[in-house]
Image 1 (cartoon, rainbow, N blue to C red):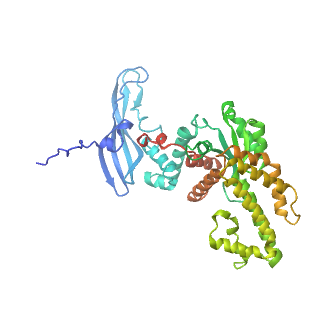
Image 2 (cartoon, one colour; image 1 turned 90 degrees about the vertical axis):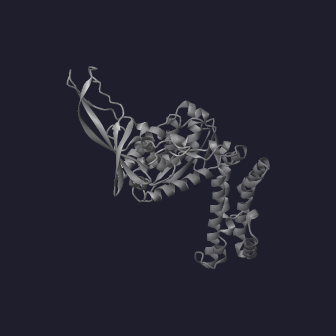
Image 3 (spheres, helix red, strand yellow; image 1 turned 180 degrees about the vertical axis):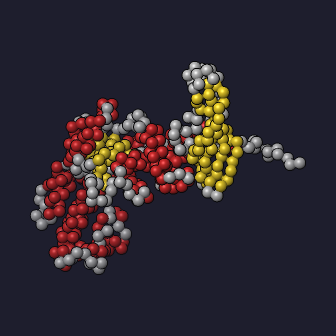
Length: 441
């Protein structure tokens, strides 16, 4: 006779709990393995035999089978075949069936556990919809529609999503690379966790277009509590974002973040290098041209240069024909040094001196520095505000843009902006896994 006593420390096997059916109001009654899936036979635990119209007790009439895609067991698609009993009231003739709302939404094709598994796979594990659909054994549209609906209900439409936001970043983003339609959107990022050292930035919202009106309308749609709580807005050099912020949240400090300021100087350096290259050689940079070979080294901070890189720049600047590039490179390095200074007040003084120097006395031949100086002079208050408001860089915004690029690539592109916004919010909205599945808490 076989001893069925479980080993010490183990309880008797409960297949209903193992298959995560106990929280769905179901009980496991059997199972069947098919070549491409596992089928679990279930019954509804609560009999539910009382008439919903008159309250009389009904008599069992027949049963129907409801099939639900469930959380895969070992990546094997799992299907629940739920036996649902139907009753008929002898007094009023009303017919009803057992309540399965604990197991799934009405007319849903996924169980609640399967739906949470799918949402967890998208949000936490960053799986593609195709991979989730394969794991559930359902069509792509079925998985996608279910995930978006549950994501909007549980996460995106969460009324507390905009609470505690004090620092926001705004930037443009290319959501598709096609010639048809507007390919730009405006992304709004919550930078409060970055400033407070409490975590990474998160995507707050995404709106169609890249204009003052797009950002202004989004701010106007927020309630007074949100607008009053915003203290700092980090942005690039686009004046439309600044004007929108000044009109809708006038008490907030606008900051032109270091990422975009340094990029302005870097772009000026690149344009100067290309102009000098063309003037000297009459063509764009070739592989062995000194200016072209040094293009990446020129963008490296002076304090991070290796001995080989330093030697390459010294050899480059020995040639008097490269003096304009050297002058522009010097301005670029002064800007980096100002931002990297350990004393923020001294860094601010250096940046202020740099803006003053670029505003007057620049030789006309240095057209790139002249343009840079005009931009910095116009936005001087926003540039210098960073040194009094640390942690307001839009660098995390660019990092989120890279994650969205990966999302678009794994999905092989998006055609529907509404779906793209929803998937982006799920991907980079900073949602805690505990909200998606209780067992992760």
